[in-house]
Image (tube, rainbow, N blue to C red):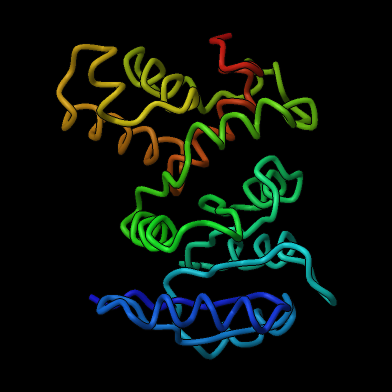
Length: 224
């Protein structure tokens, strides 16, 4: 199955570089490009896209607001935020807007390709430890941090699922969670799937964000 990718960046040379890398892959096809968020939204109305590589700092409409509008649509493509700095408030805002993860613009080609495939498959774990560090830094910006009691949706989870959710939010992979809880990796994957379904979340990045929003995990990765 070919992954249909859209490149959104106001730097033509950067788009050209990404397009060359992706075009060399038998399972990827760059089906669209845009130079800003407004153009991206217009193109998406008439083009089927699976994964959007989204820059954040663009004219007319930035990548964060574009991501928010894209993710609000029914059955939206997955969005990967492109950022210049490892701990960038724009990346944080992008995750809050619904992006499935973020990558640095100078990411090695192999990591970029792996990230696109991961997001397309639904795993959406681009860099969980980096995501956690990002949220640690910007957790005070979360309006509901520390108010777990106000999020009754967490009551839908079993004790084991809450335990798994905490470890996901701390940046652990399925394999690491399996080792920590003495479970099989397949069992952990099942728990993660149930967490996503019960809480209406698209991917693990949203699990991390919700864990911080509700206070289930505090800045620094500690369990509330």
